[in-house]
Length: 257
View 1 (spheres, rainbow, N blue to C red):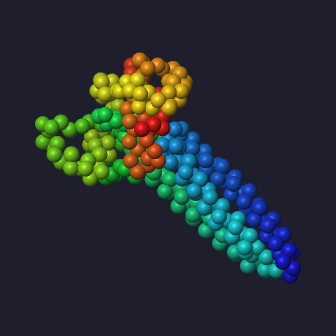
View 2 (view 1 turned 90 degrees about the vertical axis):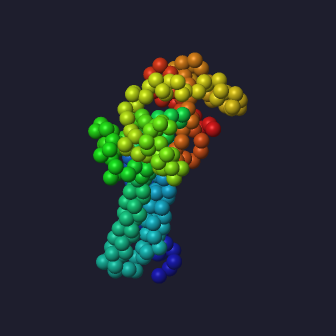
View 3 (view 1 turned 45 degrees about the vertical axis):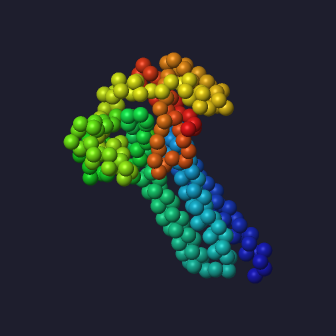
């Protein structure tokens, strides 16, 4: 058979497969970017990058392999078997990608002393969830909820152990026994908030971005403060959280150190 005679139906099949894969990829964006990683956590927690990798691998596993195996000279049963195997391989790769993304999805945005810390599903020891308040034991599927974290005092019996755990990477925000309602720590949060003028001095090149962000949030340098955001393993760069002083509610996020 002439090479062109084989290539034409193979390209047609690969194109159909590609369009189907793109449709599945765009549909999955609803799950990734609207539910598990809502803005701005698609950037903070790497949701957009994860989605892009999964879709890229999915397309590579499918249409390209279809282009290779489709041959009009093959018996229909053999061709159906080959295409079925490719679809199965593609489905397995996609399912594994979804599983990895679900493990990395943000669950809580925790106020922890002098910072916010992003807690992902993987950060939480599920066997310790019973130690958390009852209303904080359900793990969100629709983006992070606000959480307060009780810190140990130097006079507490477990203070030294708490410090050792933090040095090992098990920060208080990762321990359900330290969780509390976000609103219960509002006075401490209001006191800890840093002035926006400090952020402006540190980042003179970002003054316009800071001012625009405050305007969009309906805030100004007096009604708002900020704290750094520690995103742990999910962090792709440094971020700060802009908080309304009166309510303690995070209103905006900026990719600044």
